[in-house]
Image 1 (spheres, rainbow, N blue to C red):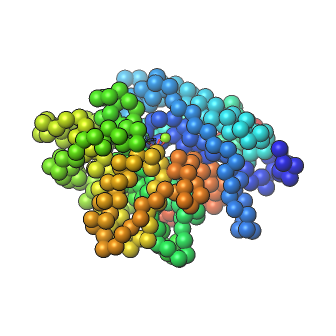
Image 2 (image 1 turned 135 degrees about the vertical axis):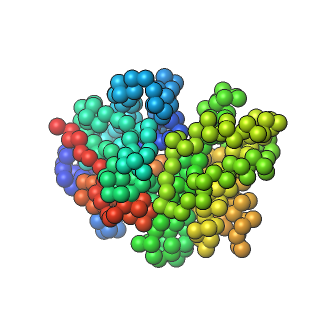
Image 3 (image 1 turned 180 degrees about the vertical axis):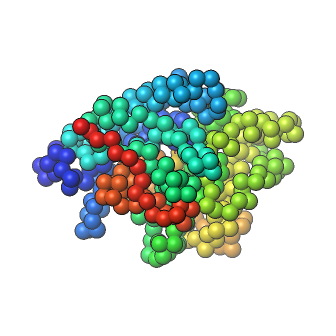
Length: 388
Ligand SMILES: Nc1ncnc2c1ncn2[C@@H]1O[C@H](COP(=O)(O)OP(=O)(O)O)[C@@H](O)[C@H]1O
Ligand SMILES: [Mg+2]
């Protein structure tokens, strides 16, 4: 271990952990990063990464909590406790891999698991037991990042655009960052005018593709998009899916499993029974690709490049369809690239964003962008659960 680390729990420590477990319910991604607080030329550095998949019973419990059900307060509390154990395991792996003791980490930023997202009703719920997590890991925990933005009249989502702006924004090139998790969101980063950053949820990312392949192939996701690529997108079904009112709504807007779930898909499929399961998967892949492309062409047609992150960045068929949909609608070619070329692997971006949001909290700096979420103003996001 290096000797120039800050003293334990020093207020000047720049080491943070970020944990993200998103709508896909696949597991928790973690990063341990050095995030220098001031612009003294020190770049941020990822020191360790870890991924802990959720076991089937936890995934099923979290899935069941997406809808109303019997005894759900108790089921939520028990799932939150179980989640905290997996979050703590992810933290332990990060500390072990980096050989950095817990006492040197300034804070953990943890997203929690979204089980309801109803900003129009004044709430969003990322279930978690941050008290238990602080107890298990012995590090200050910052949690519940979205609620303050909702309290200020915002959508509470997406929150990653502020981080995208900080790490992917450019003085010379207009860019779009696309995060394809369970849900997909874009950040529009104008060249040299980063204060004008905007962004919103474009709609489903992997959530419907995952549900469909689980039902028909017993897999949790369509690796590389191979099954989807074996089918053929159906124009009529694609048009029906794209006619959902969500896509015509102006930003700010955000969505989740509350809207895009398998029952929604089943209702749409009722009049397309002739399609093979592989054709439906191909159509769902095209659905994600074309709704992202539509959002970019409508709101950021002048962008110089699109950078993709989130697990969807590993779906080759999805990226191919996204590239085709963009070039069909744009006057000039818009390259589709991985955020890897900007120095952050696609599966680490969101976890790093929550390390960054934890830092924003510790420095009492705002974490939201009102132009993105629709909140009344900039807000410091999150709540603190101290280590001791
Ligand atoms: N190799 C791959 N091929 C295709 N899809 C993948 C691959 N790896 C991950 N994914 C997709 O990414 C999802 C996880 O993405 P992630 O960014 O963790 O989303 P979330 O933030 O919603 O958890 C998986 O459920 C899967 O659909
Ligand atoms: Mg995930």
